[in-house]
Image (cartoon, rainbow, N blue to C red; front, side, top):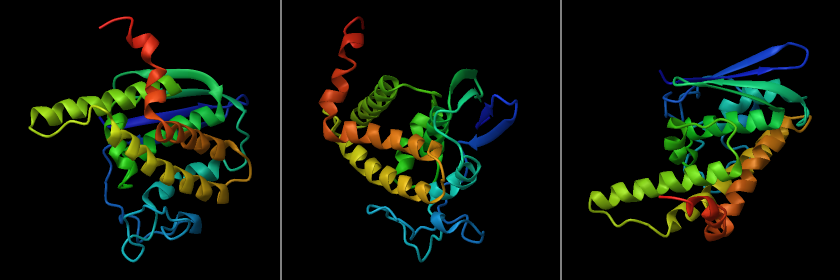
Length: 227
């Protein structure tokens, strides 16, 4: 099974559910023949580093997958308390949190498993998705996944990037994408839940982009305890 299901329950008892197939099509042009909001069109706030061509791809692969979510939460305040549940193939997760934390986790899964050529470089993280991850958990998973890839590259005769310069460069690319996506989502939101959820990704990618060594230093205390 490749579906991960996000469920939200509000204080009034109403519920909302969203299913993410992490193995869905990676074809960025698969929505060309459909009708979607103008803010999801590729040429609307198109990322400076986007490798896609609006002549062949009508809609931004990431924005179009946010459209239904952004519409549903357009009037939601960030701090609204909810009960979140995530059902993955191996286990389920429950958390009492605010709407922006719930959306941040959902957005992260959608971005990493979608058809955006840049965001999809995070696809391995979608395979081992951790809902509601903290900043430290996100840094650990990101760096750990990257270093495992370097180990496998070395085994196959390629030069490994133990200094993680490539990871810092990736975050420069991700930061550009995240900032552009946030501008799109502003067009679809009247209150701040969607916007603040996306702002979280901008904050993380900015931290790693600026100084990856400082980011990794946050993990030293834990890692020096063992191994």
